[in-house]
Image (cartoon, protein in one colour):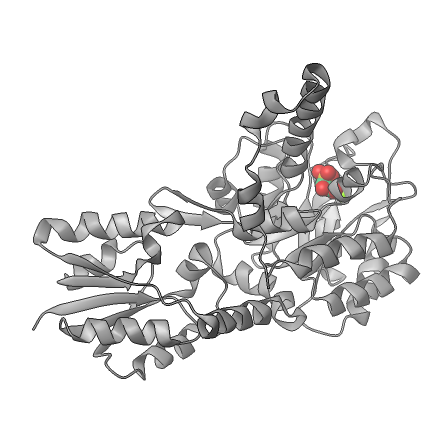
Length: 431
Ligand code: SPV
Ligand code: MG
């Protein structure tokens, strides 16, 4: 009896999957791999069913002889174990980022005479409707909100990128790359005060009001499903912060990060070049406690951001504050630095982790950008935020285009470096 292998990474079974199984049956015994949660979030989307539920779903299908776990998006381990005569998949994996997976399978099975079967991909109104329903389910506040906590459990490090509009949200949502023999994408989005303000042509001094910042969140949420971490600046007055917490939580935001500064807040990357005042430990703790008291779900996170290293108050102060903020109820600690060398960040993480193994640590490596995610994770970092790189890459590109159109009195000279209109349109989903 020949064996036919296919891998499912789905929360619903539709006619496309049934078609694959029916075709597979004609070639031999059907073995289906269910992609693990960890692999699924790197590959396409966050699962809306638990792994166990997905496993049972596949096991119950007519025509399936055996179900196994596939714990990597690439097939190396599975193929080494079961040596299938055939690997069957919808032919949509012949292009786009999924082609890397097909190439991987081809390379693995060709040497022993295995073959790929590409089944015409089923895409009709019914399948589209099911796809849309899953997407909508992922985007709903109650699902989206809790996803940051789930990701912290599942990922060695949660990769977060700054977004400030629907379009940048789409980039965070849809960008997938193939590298290091796997697929990769961002896990979460950061609504930066710096970039949200910059997009509006305003300074990063808590000038853009909350109503406007919520409008940005709404624009992003309308077209994405990934969880959101909101840059709440200082949180403002405690009496106001409690309302912000309620609103963010209701919208489905996963976390707010507030920094321990008071008075007129300036961007941290100015450091001590401008006047900035750090809040007292007592007062900031009261703010954290007040926020924790009003939140209604267990999902929402209030993360305390420590500015001691930015304001040159020393490591001891940073650690003392971390301790106090966690005791006050903070669900995570963000430690910031404007040094190019990551040494002080790593030192903080090592000291903090030696006394606290659980509380998530967040870092923003804008200045200390030489360090890789793996090394941060090895020092106990749970969330890395690329806080402003999209804005900083877009601005010079736009400025150069504007200059060149003025210079040449037409747009032909800039055309080569522009994204084709067709590509922009295909980025945007039509309902
Ligand atoms: C932001 O992105 O607005 C931040 C991070 O607060 S930083 O600009 O590095 O202070
Ligand atoms: Mg900010």
